[in-house]
Image 1 (cartoon, rainbow, N blue to C red):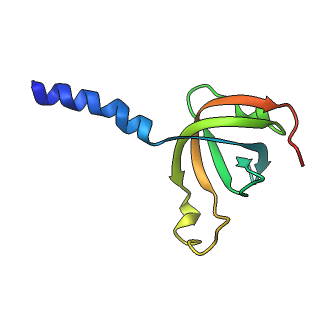
Image 2: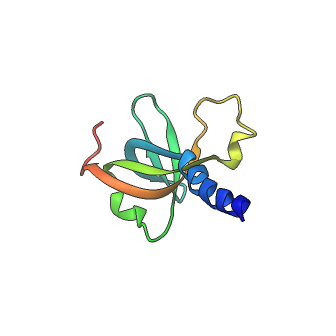
Length: 101
């Protein structure tokens, strides 16, 4: 029983370890929602978790918290620094209604 208790406690920390928070501009490209950072120029493909509606954040500067994972193209485009990373979004907060250009 002690082992089961230890396993239950380790699950939330594993989840929290994969969480990242990034800030950027939401756009739509090839049917996917993307978050683009102007500096350092990273981009993330966004997938909504739960009941989050990403469409309402289009064109806005937001702070997104979610779980990061490589996109399928990362394995073939390993040499490119512009490869997007998939971010499964658990929360979104609007910073500005308009993206700064």
